[in-house]
Image (cartoon, rainbow, N blue to C red):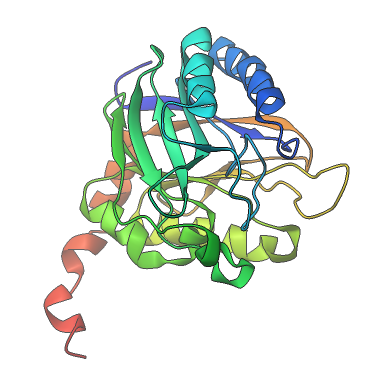
Length: 265
């Protein structure tokens, strides 16, 4: 891995519902292949171990349970950074969490979904997060968001103000609104002059809720790569810090903002 460039692998895959041991076993194979192809970081869709369910509060993990140990083992066995998700146990309701594990298996970042999907009732079953999460890899600062967060521009602006070069978005975004998915990925990247990485489930054999759309968009709002199939596929892209710096130097949008004025308009 060259400093300033990070190759990432996005896994577009269907989850076997509520069988985390099967899903995590498959994750090892994906991670080994990603490492073989030169990736330093691999990321999976939202709630991949169980499949996303806005009312699904089983298989919670306190951070030291079977699912977190499973993700840690995936990272250690493949020797790669892994972004995976789990339902974090709290004193009240669980949280929808995306976490990053280093190649030695250590947890290095954790983000609890801030914007819960109220149209699906997620806000009735899960506890909202309240903090950003940023980690650095290869000299690049990465932020984390989850699915519905993509609709909220202020979150991505907050990451940009904290110097993030990219935001990774594990998701479970349905076919019915895939046009919105593509629009928001490009908008968040362009308005913040950063990479936005969206990882979505593959089309399932049992239903048509998802149909892929995994993509990486660069700071110019251009598609670096998008899955060419709705099925299971590994999508690779290089995140290059020089591209971020070039975009921000050419169009100094951040310094041209009028934050002193907006609140009084």
